[in-house]
Image (cartoon, rainbow, N blue to C red; front, side, top):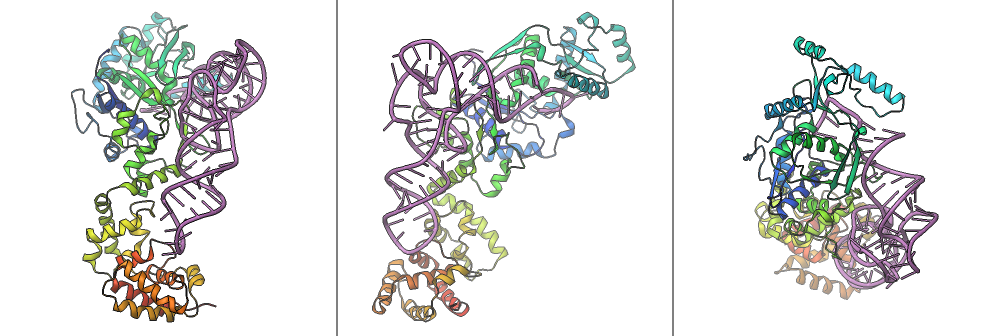
Length: 502
RNA sequence: GGCCCCAUCGACUAGUGGUUAGGUCAUCACCCUUUCAAGGUGGUAGCACGGGUUCGAAUCCCGUUGGGGUCACCA
């Protein structure tokens, strides 16, 4: 193992969407592998046929790739350690299970669900830890079940599971990269089922075998697996294999510090994608939930490449971290502010085009869908939006006529003489040869000065009639971008529909 | 309940025996400003508690409390 190339894996079960906690686990595995110039692999753990969801495997991988986490080996990509789907490796598990049976490290168990449940209830009632009572542990392994009876059941074809025999009176010890030494007493470890009655292995058995066969050097997974670590270690010992190094990540938490769950917000990466968060921000955010550069660094914004360069398991914290959307939102804004215009245009254009199929625009389509126009909108709006799609939805007046005028704004800014003033000023705008921000501003001030009025008496109404709302970018620049024709049309419409409310 | 893990501002965290306990988000105030943002300045706010060890503990040890995970033929 020394000097061996680092290999890590993310091993989700295809039961649905990708959980943000899963994304972070995948990310840390990926970052660590890449940092060490090693390999990152995706393996699908579909040993529970009942929970398998059609299409989940594909969407899981797709979402990871969307986030920039691309595997070196996976079910779709293949690799020399395949197959990478556990349901396609059944014969492998069967072989290793037989070996454990032969070596008396595992035994057949014919107990029914009812029997087990009854036993469990009894133990709980007695205040004991629910554990299998070893009724079917054979005589030759220290139990009380005669081989003949086991043989008979087997011959009759009764359904059975295969359990591992946890050694008595030993302690299992290991060193967690994040947590340090952890110790368990074997008395607290149950005789875990290795093979289910449907012939499929359990997670514990399959993952240990695959982790070994696929030559992973480091297992990085959530803390919820910490307590099943001793079972896995025992299996490695039974087989005489060297266990990989392990790191158990702290959990992601709800605001109330319970394990991050639905009910209290979105947990699926897909939910965040749908809301408009970018991969940059989500990766950055999730990376900082439990890891930091340390050494006095005050950097908050990291690219994937920077994360790879700086990541280390030693600097992963031990305590759970609350998934705080406020910080995510802030990060998203940071990325929007610094994202190159072309990239934003590429994202915005399809959104706009979809909108244009729903709604009619009075503006020239070729103009408003041009890169040139979109670039101008972006420059005016990039510090004012929280998501990329808001370039279209939040400031829709750059593409569509205002459908209404903000009532409160009108009430506050529309005076008795506003319509008249606007009408007069329109005449000036009409004559403008150069419809530029500077020119508009100069003429507006010129118009207003002799009347000893403040520019605000026109500025606010102009914003209302052209945008419909009371907030937005610099008015003059906004008018310039909208263009003379549109501005004149909207002023006219505004004067016609808005009336002074005393 | 047994076992295991964890514990610095509301949130994410820096800190590894000597710091006015630092940064970011959020929040508050002010500045900038036609609006909204962005930006700038400043503020509020934290070492869960109790014992040790030590000249000296956020830092080391023990305990308490609190939180979490896990105890399936689910992963």
